[in-house]
Image (cartoon, rainbow, N blue to C red; front, side, top):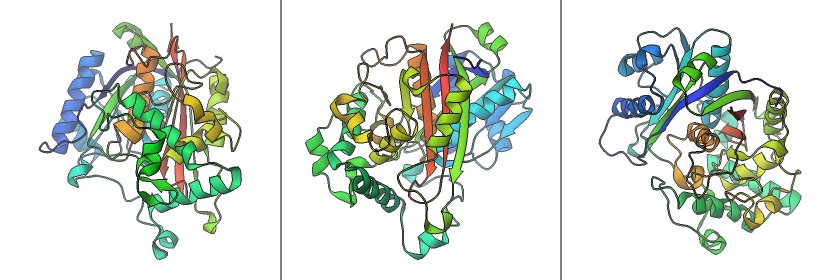
Amino acid sequence: MNGRPLAYIVGIFEHPDRVIPERSLSQVYLEIMAGLIADSGVAPEQIDGLHSSLTPGSLINLADTLGLRNLRHFDGTDLGGATYVSSAGKAARAVASGQADCVLVIMAGIPRRGITMTSSGWASQPYEDSVGSSLVAQYALVAQRHMYEFGTTREDLAHVKVASSYHASHNPNALLKDRVTIEEVLEQPPIAAPLHRMDCCVTTDGGGAFLVVSEALAREIGGPMVGVIAQAEAGRTWNNGAPSLTTTEAVRTGALAFHEAGIRPQDVDYASLYDSFTITVLLALEDLGFCAKGEGGRFVRDGGLMSPHGVLPTNTDGGGLSNNHPDRRGGMIRVIEAVRQLRGTAHPDLQVPSCEFGLVHGFGYSLGSKYTASTAVFGRIA
C-alpha cells in the first residue's frame, strides 16, 4: 500500500429492520443515530460534519432532529446507489483537509410504505420515457447484450444470487434468509428477459450510518482502525442513445482508486459490489479488473463469490439481492459490511481470514441508460 489513509471509519450501524410499519422517518434516523453512538462511543457534540442525500426536508432539519449543534461541514450529494460509497471518500477528504474532524454519514428510508425522499434524478429522461422504458428493462438490455457478446448464460447470473442467498442465510436480519439453488433461480418468472425475479434486488426500509474521523480521534477512540485509502467516481450520460452496454465507468473509477491506494485488484481480500441486479455484479467484476472482459460468468461459477474460501468473497451480508437495500441506496450497506470484514467482526462462518484490503463499488441509476459510479478502497490499519 502506497497511499496513506485520508481518514478512518470508527463507527458503523445498520438498522436491523427491513420492514418498518409504524415509525416515522425521523424516528428511524434517531434509531440509527443511537446505534452508531453505541458502536463508536462518539458523542453528538463531537460531530462537526454531516453527509446525507435522503433527509426529512433538508440537511439542517436532519441536524436538528439528531441534536447536532457543532456542524461546520455539509454535503447532500445524491448519486443514487453510488451515493454513500462516494460519501466515504468526500467525508475522508473533508477530514484530511481540515474542514471537519468527525463526519457523520447517515441515511434512512421507509419506501415499503410508500414514504421516500428520493430525489428528482429520474425526472429528466425524455428519450426513455417516450419509448416506455423502465429500470428493469434497461438492465435486461445490458444482460441481453452481455450474453450476445460473450456467451454469458442465465446460469452464470444465477450463481450471483446463489452466493448472496448463502451469505444471507447466516444473517438473522436479512429480508430473504433462505438459501436457493441454481434451479430455483432459473425457475422464477421473468420480469424483463433475461432477468427473472431472483435476478432483481429487494427494496427495504431501514438505513445505516458510519463515522469518518481524523487519525487522532480514531486512536483516541481505540479499537480496530479502518482507513479510507482511496475513492474515485465517474458518470456516464445517455450519449444520444449510443452508450456502451457492456463496459461501465467502473473501468475508470477502479483504475483511479487502485492507483491512489497503490494496490492491485489481486490485493483485495473482500469486495462489496452493488448488486441491484445479478448482471450488475458481473460487469463490476470485469471492469474493476478482477477478471477479463466477458469472463464474469466464469469467475462466479463454482462459488467464486462465496466466503470465506471463494476467489473473491463478495457481499457477505447477503447484499441487495437477499439482505438489505434501503430506499434503493444500497451503497450505505456495502460500506458497512466492508468495515465489518476489515474489523474482523463479520459472521464467524463468513469472515475472510486476515482481511487487509476491502473494495466497495456502487452504481447509481441505470447501466442501460445513464448512471453514476464510485469505487472506494479501505484498509485495516495496525
